Amino acid sequence: MHRYLVPFGPKQTPHLFTDVLVIGAGIAGLRAALEAPASLDVLVVTKDSIQQSNSSYAQGGIAGVLSPEDRFENHIEDTLVAGAGLCDRAVVEMVVREAPQQINDLIRFGTNFDEEDGQLALTREGGHSHRRIVHALGDSTGHEVMRAIIERSRQAPNVTLWDSTFTIDLLTHAGRCVGALVWRPQHGQLLIWAKQTILASGGCGMVYRETTNPPVATGDGMAAAYRAGAELRDMEFMQFHPTVLYVAGSSRYLISEAVRGEGAYLRDKHGERFMPKDDPRAELAPRDIVAQAIVRCMERTQHPNVYLDLAHLDPARVRQRFPGIDRVCRGFGLDITKDRIPVRPGAHYMVGGVTVDTQGKTTLPGLWAAGEVTSSGLHGANRLASNSLVEGLVFGALCGRGAAEAAAQMTDSFVVPPLTNASLGGAAPGDAPILDVADITNSLRSLMVRKMGVVRDRAGLLAAQSDVDFWCRYVLAQQFADRAGWELQNLLTVARLMIGAALAREESRGVHFRGDFPLRDDEHWQRQLPSPALGG
Image (cartoon, rainbow, N blue to C red; front, side):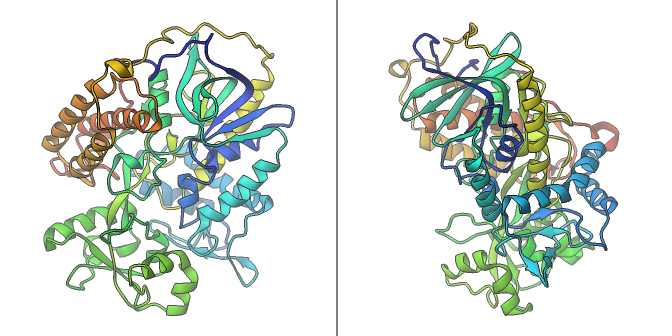
């Protein structure tokens, strides 16, 4: 693998200098940007429109202790239980205790959360012992939160937002991150030099064919950080959401955890509830348990999906609580108050990613990270529902403050440092074999569903590793000049790390289930697995 995806020459490439560069405009990136004082220039870049992020697609809500019946200790314990022995307790306690203030900050930024009788409406989701999830517009929490935080960011005079800006690679010099190489339609390649860089580029759900993620979630930040020498860990832990709409011809639309939180049942093709036999928490068990139970049910019944049933719930309440889901299902002739909704698991949230400490620092000096691109220690081996947005808020704020303080201590310098290996890219387009990027991408995504899905085993993982290694040998050697090619290279890089980690962890824990090692093994595996270093 080459250090940089494309060759570039500092003398031929335009330059831009900023105090803080934020890569990604989801909830973590924008929350970070808002922490910088007005004396510092902040540039936020995102590869698509500013509204396109996993944050915007979040339905369920944000978890926080906000009712007198609930306590911090309850939320902490629920998170630790869901994390299956791999959570960092100090991180869990920090995030849980910060959550109410972050929710209040969102309200201050203009977020309109749903209310009942003048108080914040709280719901419950799988793995939570109390009602503690705030939501907005029923089941469109992410959309409303991002509306408010984008508007707030646009009002900040020191924050510049660039959309349609693809981050190709992080720039490094003398062992530290010094910015990023990006591509913009109006500029082509551009070198952005930053005193401090914050990576908040989101997850990699598009490595799977069945996913709730938007098309932008191709693991670009994880792959770029890996090429730059930052440590990644926990790459075996991809969380599969148990309930993704499964209708021929539809995109794989998320059916929120909150549907089961409000009392929906899961039924097999014969109409029988199956969750009570698998777990005493039934439909409210954590996502890993529910997803695995659904896969077993599908195998047992030889049926491609199971069904969510809300027919026993109050129809008016269902439509009021889930207007987005109601609208999508009606498009397929389904009445969610009467008809059973066909669902199956789909890739939803990447638990692993770039290693960060309790301040959001990565192992690469000058680089901070927050949100789904990271492995912070909050989620352990399985994310508790609605803990992701609050993680992005807490760590985004931490990164924003930390990066701003570090940048403020650095003097302005407009001298371009020499970039070693800057000319190393793949084979020039004219020398490369003609590749069908879309076909390879589709093949990879299908392979990951079959061999690296909810249930894995050594034989399947070895077969997947062989195929991905083969694709990597000729795809990563190429020099692409467009987003689709770079995204494929990043997807392959991330897939290889995920498969390697899944092969290494010979046990079942959280979202990682090995059919050939079905038991949890704390004696040997109650530890996190860093991915091998580049070239290792």
